[in-house]
Image (cartoon, rainbow, N blue to C red):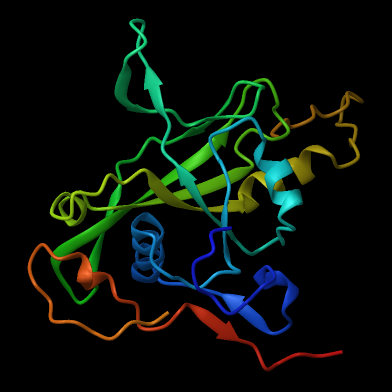
Length: 231
């Protein structure tokens, strides 16, 4: 991790009774801090290449992901190259070495500085699904939400947004399909086996100015302290 500020020295899942449940605006605040090299709360967001050679389930296992919860990462953009070896405007979302990719069929959803008034867009959130026809047991098993800052909030500062913030989780729907597919086969009326289903920091508030990235101030750090701990 970077040497920027933060009070926790271990990953958040090593601390009992604390959960990281940030809002979209808080996540964009963390992303802004990362891009600008400013201090931010550490322990809940890791630095890792989600568009590299490591598969999603290996990443999940390495960072001790828990079913029903999410993992958060800062990762760098990777632009595809053209035949002339020039960088294109297309972002490469391939992952692993088995032809897997983060695929999206939807456009990005805008995130507003104030959810009650949709006047100022501060960033975007886009949903991706892991797809890999060569590994049907993992195809569709992972969901990723990619957060990016609005270009206008960066151009006025002369900063290139080479980072995005990504949230990954297991796809419960696909997991259920896999469980069904692995159940003991029951013979049908003709005595033929049923076919197996395959599937796989709070800063001080500043005056808002149109076009200013200072609108990305969070209410808190997105931490939830759970006092209902049973032994």
